Length: 310
Image (cartoon, rainbow, N blue to C red):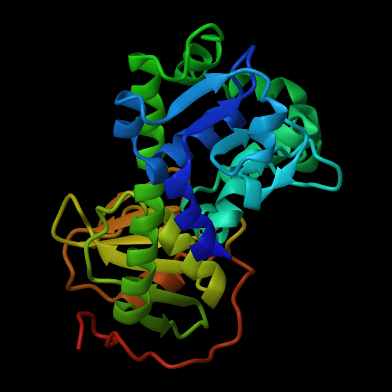
């Protein structure tokens, strides 16, 4: 079905979404669809994008993508409206599910689930779900979002809006692809370690400059139960020690003042060493908050106690 759906996209002649105020869902749906249809086809007039009510003929056709309007969820006819009965998930999610990439997308974009809940159930429902005050919602809107979503009279096929849609769509898809590649690299190249006090972590000596490294390392930590990772410092000659999770027993701020340490973050989630000739086991165990020591266990494996690597 997924391959058939992607092949069917080649026959699409137009995109229709609702008029009025622009919302994140219809904007994202069109932005993502452009990555599979091609911006150049819109610019050449081969594919149209219109913000209005779809016709019955368009709803019945598989040549017109309909997003966030029409009251139908029929992937085989290119209809993706989450307002249809018994449908959960924003229209952009339904489109990505039809392509078979939704799970990959959410790994690269941690905001995706929030966007779905806020669009389907409203921002207040999301605020209650994550236990934050409602007033915080209005502090989350960036000036970029405000500028785009207030342009309700702009056509999605205008040069400015088309450029924005393509920019966002390209970013979303490229991040997903980068995430896939980096997760594969981390799975193959990382080294799992356990300190004498039983703290699990991993070492990755590859590049951390990828935009998706924070999300990929967090994903890997959740899969493996790791509490920290060690990577080359991208600004110096030492190591970067990173703690996963705000409730971790590790507080890397406790390392401040040690001769091996170049920097510690006030939040306690990051520390950097001056060079790599350090005892990483000792540093990690020394950052354990008082009263949270676990039983000693595991294999030392990757690092020697005297410091340095095998």
